[in-house]
Length: 190
Image (cartoon, rainbow, N blue to C red; front, side):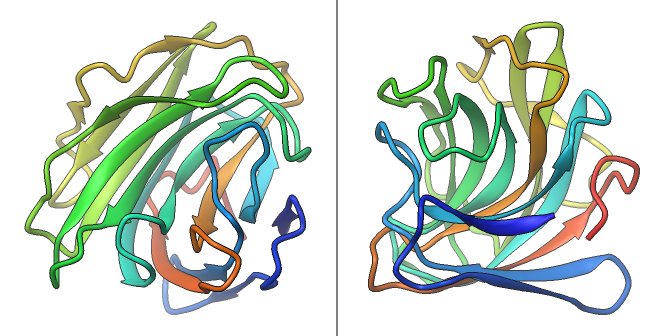
């Protein structure tokens, strides 16, 4: 399934490329306050992990977010857990951010942010163990995952929760685009 969450001014889209590569684009004021606006490609809960390699192609430094998310539902104020990349402002750099909203309509919290990484692509993983969610990254090939310090949070998601790939421009005037390569096909397929 796919769609815009929170009615962003610029509609999002996605297209399947070669292999398991999915190009996702979208606008939206962002993810991380009490209401979100972004483009989401998701499926109902089918496992405890969602992983993808993210290559950020275009977007606004500091505002655009592209990553993997577990979310209670598709309402704009829904509880969620997100591991995403944010363009660093210098070519081929990005930061990884982890955020969560633990209650419907509550203000989202930034749990951790990395320093600027001199890479153009990174593997991101969100792992759920009961009500505990944690984020991991992998800069090479998706096999050696490193926990992101400070990323663990307790968040009870219903069995009907949704998980998938997100993109947000960070403001209503910016359309961002990223390429995702799904690393665990059983969790997400377009």
